[in-house]
Picture 1 (cartoon, rainbow, N blue to C red):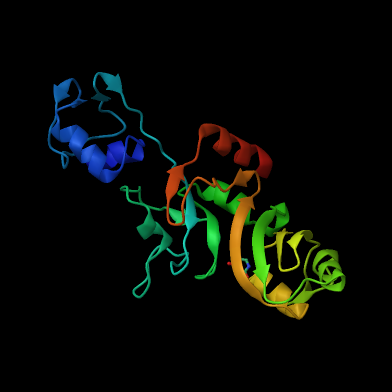
Picture 2: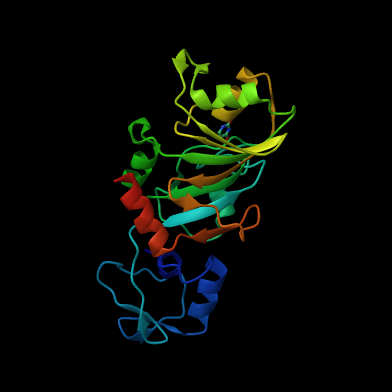
Length: 234
Ligand code: URA
């Protein structure tokens, strides 16, 4: 693996920052100063240090992105920017977004190369709660809220599972769903005679969107967030 890629995986900094650190001769490979970012290293054998401190290789990466509108939840696309394009570090191969948000949906998206965790978060058996902030076109009536919550809506010939509505005002609410069907919230609102005008995911399982992240920004998950997610998904 390239040295700059290794350091970026190890969450030392952005691609640009890592290159600067290398050029400033702060990095050693097996005790020898290395100032070329394209040097190939063996991440399983070589000892890499920055200012004398050893850097450890992370097999899995976990990223929280505040997805902006206009970006698609895919790893590559010929027409649109993808969520991976929003991440300005060299990512290891095999990173992907966990689940999909529509092109016009904003908010919490986990990006990882941990297939097991992703499977556990997405598996319908696990009923992972996904909480969304929703703004709608028409006032939310009591009947609408009741129907949204009690699971009587049929999508794709199957009744959806119960959901939870926390009303904020007459045209906005938090809606928590347990499944992740195609356009689920938009179709649920449509089924009760309403329309979504703005949608943002704010939570997935134990993972809560960091509100200090502006739209399009990202950060690494903390160890605590990773452990909590793993414990929650079992
Ligand atoms: N439901 C939707 O309709 N769209 C999303 O992006 C997520 C949930």
